[in-house]
Image (cartoon, rainbow, N blue to C red; front, side, top):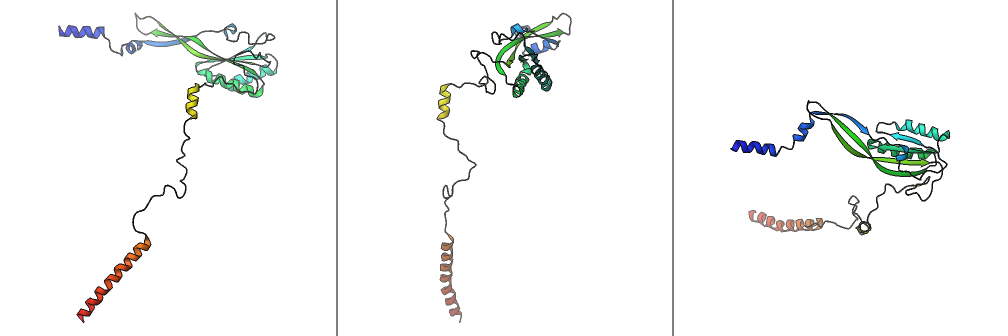
Length: 234
């Protein structure tokens, strides 16, 4: 009876590594990312009406920044496009920001930044008979940056004009935190040397003049004793 109960307990309460043991019989096959079109970009009513089309630059984790920057600069200089969009997801988000910042150094561009998500399907193939394929759906953050040589409407949220900074990446602190930070005492610079005459350690004991005077008194007291001893021997 005890053996039967123990077996049932193991079956009813499997160990925590059972899921990992099951995934050992699968191998990762491919990732299928959701394909976006220009109509899916979050820039509705942002582009000027005169812009019939724009250049769309996709940035990934392995993209060479210098190559895509050179291509975008040539397209703007030749007049092929008056506006472009940088898009990157996952590991390409940081490079997407770098491309936009580098391009602004050579061209006076208006900028609008938007965040979103892209759906990705992870496919796992079974390595044993009797198992089915597993498909995992994930959403990864995606960054889109619209840049235009022509002036954009001031009513657009988050508009950044040429040669200006944006507060898109700044985090607004609550007023209570700001007030608390303002009431904090100034930090103490412990590396600076202390001023002279302050925090001076007191020394206990006799000073050198007092020690000399004590020695002289001891010597004067010992002289009569030696003289009296010498007189007794004579």
